[in-house]
Length: 89
Ligand SMILES: [Zn+2]
Image (cartoon, rainbow, N blue to C red; front, side, top):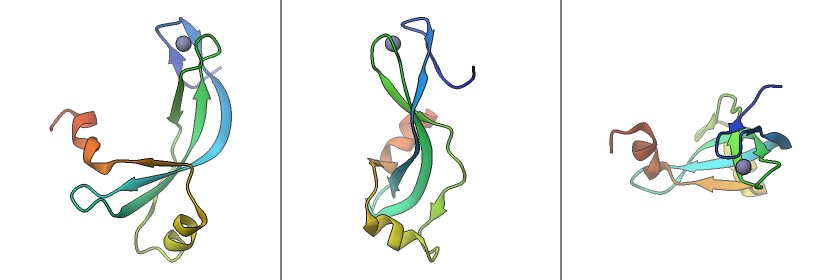
């Protein structure tokens, strides 16, 4: 078994949905920026979910970026928060 574990519950998380689309917005402008696809994992004990296992993103300007974004995304993530995640603020 690989993939995330949930330390709070002491269990492996289980895959729930593959190929979840996640749109990252640009820091500053808030405009669509990068489209990622990852897997949704869920803790079987508490139900907490995480997205992990991302491949390379499709970036703004790529011919398939706009059609895919217009078709709808599963999750939108705020690019402004990336600095917090990386600890540089
Ligand atoms: Zn848990």
